[in-house]
Each structure stands twice: as structure tokens, then as C-alpha cells.
Image (cartoon, rainbow, N blue to C red; front, side, top):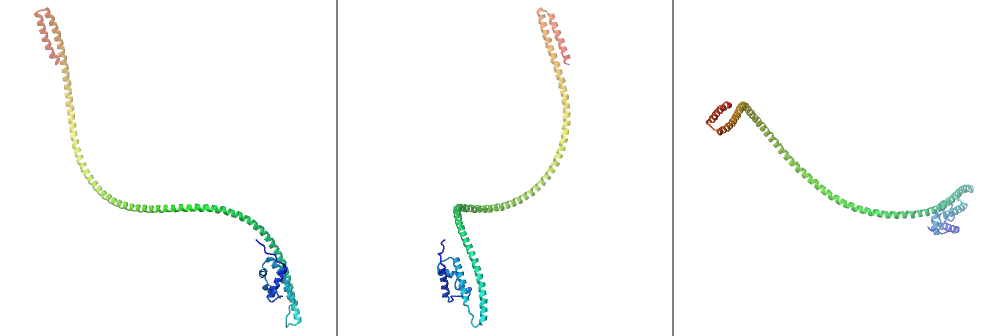
Length: 317
């Protein structure tokens, strides 16, 4: 930052006096009148340069000098000299007090100016530090701008994906609405079919109850008939059992008879076999006797045959 050009005290004094002369009051009697005519802004505008603090310090000194000179030439017309002298003394005392205050204020202002200068110097150092920090911050901002650009690109990609997802969501919502409509229609159709089936079931239930009652009556009738037939069958069974017992008794008797006949047949077979053996023996003996010869043996054989024939019926009995 460029510093203002230096201005000499003589140039400042000449400019202030010129401003007072232009206002028609080269020696103002009060500081208010002086400040109304001359100010730091007007003085700096007339000079075209200068530090405001330096101009203010020189302007305060010129103000005290010019106002004090104006008070020295102060005169009150149509007033007795004694009263005018007292008023002048009072005025000079007030002006002296004011000048003392101005001097004190000037000293305080100079101290403030020095403090401000030191603060300005410190502020300059702080500005340099802040410039360094600003450079660092700018580099950080550049890095953040790059990150922001990447984030914006990612955000745009996310927006595109979100748009695709929204389109897909819209399609899915449409499909969901269609599915809900189909489900509602199916539910209504199912409800109507269920009502029809329920009515049909109630009709079938009533028909089943009627048929069950009819079947129960038929079953009772059939049961009575079967019980009667069962009683008759029991009677027939008792008769058949008595017949069976009688037949078993007859069968036992027949079996005994057959066993007796079989025993007699076996005995008869034994007798016949014995007769055959006897006949064989007799034939053998006869053959031997014939070999010896003679009629006597033939008679003996005849007698033996007759005796055997008479013995066989006895054994058979």
C-alpha cells in the first residue's frame, strides 16, 4: 500500500491561513468557528496529500495560535471600559482554561497518535502474517476447490443414479398399482366365488342332512330286517347244529360199522390166505401121494379139502 506524500508545516500553515482568508475571518474568535472554516478533510483536499494524523496535529497547533490571537483583539462595543475589562478578563480566563484543555487534549492526541502509529506498524506486521496465512488459506481453498469439484462430479453422478432410481421407482410403483388393482379384482372375484361356494355348501349341507336322515331311517329299517333275519338264521343254525350232531352220531355209528366190516374183511382175508396155504400144502401132499400112487391118497386129499372148507366159514364169523 502506497504511503501519502510528505507535507511541510509551512505549507500546512499557508493553506490554513488561505482558507481563513477566503472565509472572510482570518482571526476567528472561537474554535467552533475555526473548525467550521478549516477541517482536516478540507485541508487534505486543498493540499492533495498528507497524513490525516499529521495534518490534525498541525491543525490543532495553528488553531490554538489563531484563536488566541483572535481573543487578544476581542472588543465589546457600547460597554463601559471597567465592565469590558472584567468581561475580557473572564473571557481570557475561560479561553486560557480552554487552551489548557486543548494542550492537554493535544498531548493525549499525540500519545494516541503514537499508539496508533505503533498499532499501525503492528497491524502492518499482522497484515504480512495474514498475507502468508491468506496464501496458505488460498492453497487450502484450491485443494478444497479440487475436492469440491470431485464431490460435485460425484454428486452429479449420484443425481444421475438417483434419476435412474426414481425412474425405476416410478415403474415399480406403476407395477405395484397394477398388482394392487389385480389383487383387489382377484379378491373381489374370490369373495364372489367364496359366497357362491358357501351358498352351494349350505345347500349341500342341507341336502346331506336330509340324505343322512333318510339313510338313518333306512338303516334303522334295514337293521330291524337284519335282526329278524339274524333271529331266523339263529334258528336255522340251531336246527343245523342239531342236524350236524345227529349226522355226526350217525357218522360215528357208520364209522364203527365200517371199522367192524373192515376187521371182518381182514379176518376173512387172513382165512382165505390160510386156506390158500392149506390148499397149497394139500396140493403138494397130493402130488407126493400121487407119485407114490394109489386111490387112498386121493380120498385123504378130498377129506382134507372138505374139512378146510368147513373151517373157513367159522373163522370168518
